[in-house]
Image (tube, rainbow, N blue to C red; front, side, top):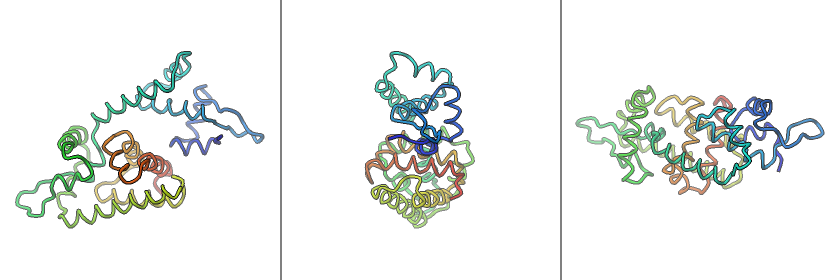
Length: 254
């Protein structure tokens, strides 16, 4: 299957301008052009773009990425395995941002309906709770979003939290239904669900487009998130990542 540049940009969660730039510098040339002159990208280009984006996550400059990809001994499979290990290591160090924001434990002296760790971190193994909390505080403890989410969660009763959790679960189930029905991540129906998902996050803090996209990427990169979504539907984490990237690229105005 060949993709036109707008289709590839939407699929990969990058801008058309970025793909034009990659073409100009010789980093990612199209497979061919159709009779109308439109760039067409095939499977080889999709694999190459994936590698480019993975290397960018590792903060390598474009020139260095081009050198690596153009090596005669470059092996896509070996590199993917190496990227996976790198991402797993990075995920272990980074805070689980959504978990921290959505389920921050705030213990207020004397409150009888104070939320428990298990309620706030539902979906993760109990053995992971302390690890997540420590990562979150270390990475995000000084951010405005973290502090605001703590403040808001601290004021929630168990009933309030149940309502918030119910809405989050309803959005995930609706996304799962769209995924199983074969709805494209960028379709109007799915993008309306992304708007609903962003609104749910506003219960805790105001998400920027960058944060929203990064959250989707974390759903796949962090095995704890991926495992949680795979319990709903295998492949749902990747689907959400694509849908959230499209919504973020739209300026979150749908």
